[in-house]
Every structure is written in C-alpha cells, then in structure tokens.
Image (cartoon, rainbow, N blue to C red; front, side, top):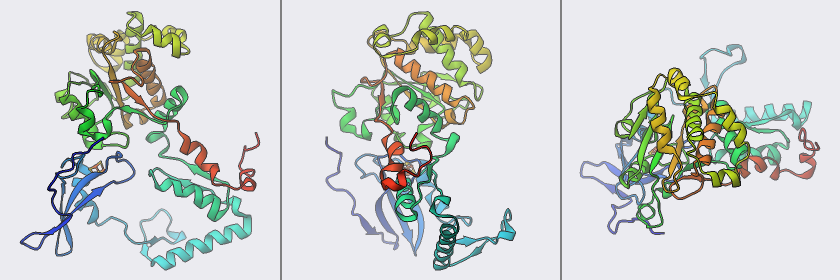
Length: 394
Ligand code: SF4
C-alpha cells in the first residue's frame, strides 16, 4: 500500500518573513480521535500559538481537520485550563477553592497517602480506576499490579455515556470489540483500488463524523466514499451539513431510535427482504426476533418518532438484501446516551446481519475481539495477586 507523500512537501519547520515560525506536526488527541493522526501546521509568533491549520502535505488528511484541532488555540490559552497541580483542603470540599502547589508537593502528598493506606489496610484497599483514553488506560493495569500491588482495578471507560452500550452489544452479538465503516485507513490508494467496494448506502445514526471524528473513523473519509458513489441515509434530530447532502434524512424525536430500528426490522422480515442464506448459517434467535418485531409496525414507529410512515418503508427497502447491494452502518455516541442504547445497537446489528452486510465488501467491518480490556487487567499480575481478585476462583 502506498501513501500520497508529496515530492516537495514544506519543510518541517520554517520561519516566515514576519518572524512567525511554522511547524508541521501530527496530532492525536485522546480520547476520541481516529487512528489516522491529522497533519497540522502550528503558527507561533513571539512564543505564542497564533493559528492552527491543516497540513496540506500530510499524506492522508491532506489539510483537513475537525473543529477540535482548529480550536486548539482556545484550548491552550483558556483561563480554566488546568496546567499545574491544584489542591483543595478537605474543609473546602464542594467549593471552588483551589490553591496551586508544586509538582514535588503533589507527588509527596500522593505517595504519603498511598503508603498510609497500604500500611493501615493493605494494598488491596486500593482500587485503580481508569477512565477512557486509548493508550493511557494501559498504564492503569501496570500501576495497580506492579507498582501498588493491588489486584483491584477497573477500566470504567466512560460508563454508559460513551461506547459502553455499543461495545456491550457488539461483544455479546459478534464477539467483536468494534464495528465500523470500511474507510480504508483514510488512504486514497485504497479507495481507488479495484478491490475496494464503496457501500451503496451508509446508514448513519446519531453520529456527525465531520465534527466529532471519533476513534474508529476518520470522518472526512465519508466524503471521499460519497464521492465514489455511496449514498447517505442520515438519522438525526438535527439537520446538519452532511444531512443536506443525504439521499434520505430521518429527523427523529430524540431517543426514539429503537422504535425506528424495530420498524425497519419489521418491514425487512415481513416483506421477506433478508438474506436467508446468512440467517440460516450464522444467526441464532431469528424466529424469536421475527415474532417480536411484528409488534412494531411502521405505523407505530412513525408516531413515536414523529416521521412519515412511508419514509420508514422507503428506508427499509434501501437497506434490503438483494444479493447485489450493500450498506454500511455508522452509529455514534447518541446511541449510548439513549436509555435504550444497548437495545438500539442490538437492533442495528441484527439489521446489518440479516441483510447480509457484516464483514463483506461494501458492508460493515467487524473488528477483532475485545482482548485488551478482557485480559489486560490480569495479564500483568503475579499468580499470587491474581488469586486475590474477587471472583477469580469461581
Ligand atoms: S480528529 Fe480532529 S482533533 Fe483529532 S487529530 Fe484530527 S483534527 Fe485533530
């Protein structure tokens, strides 16, 4: 695979005639960026960051950035940005009363507290909690097992507000850590290869790829894929730039996604628009699903979602299996923030599966198993420590 490296890219660092220095770099701001790593040009004058631009010489992103990097200057100089250790007295808990302390003081404070807990109660009294943050979380397991010598750690991700419901459903139904549109790593060489198949439709629910650029997908790739023929079905209460270019827009009432997905399944199954071969070979519970979705006709969903009944039939027929066309699923954080998030994703995976769109060219890529989260927690432990994990021997 080749990348589009320019023969004469700008130098990595240059100084303009007015003294502004321009540095080419590559950004990745965890959590939440895809794996491409966007090319940026940082303009610094008199020691101050004055502007951030996309780097047109970056072989993949070619000058395109999402708003987070474009707003980098605001983040860097925001008065509320925490750039030093800050301490609050116990008596001031709940109050916005902080005092700046030195790094040495902060380190000593943490060490003394940790040691006091270990001496008084043992290392097992400490649990290392990790939030989201793609690489940083890996250190948490080592910190707990090797440094603090406690068997207790918890990779909480963002809980039920981001990724948890989606990954739960993906793991339960597919054994996969993540499913996504095949965006060819953002590489033009891939998109223009005869082996690459652009989906006929991209079904995008609760996601705005150009703005959010979440990990798993470089949002601008969607534009490139649309240029190669993919049509977009946009499901979002808001009308956004991408929706104005979509083949179909379903502006649902917030949190009614489950009703829509069940109605789509209802039409596809009742009109016999599914991939019988795939269902026979790979699906379990199909009969139960078919029975259950009879309760959710488009007329019911149309009322719940606040959209035309006809629009649901139209959408279902675009997603139907016919042995030739494929569609790919894009689902965003809005699914997780839905009280029925897990069920919405279960429905979407069922829709992808029975229409024969999992792991096929032009369909939805099914990623590898969730090995890291499942095994990373105990892999770095000694046997003695592992035996202390709650539930390890059951
Ligand atoms: S996805 Fe957005 S925030 Fe992340 S590196 Fe690219 S432009 Fe920057």
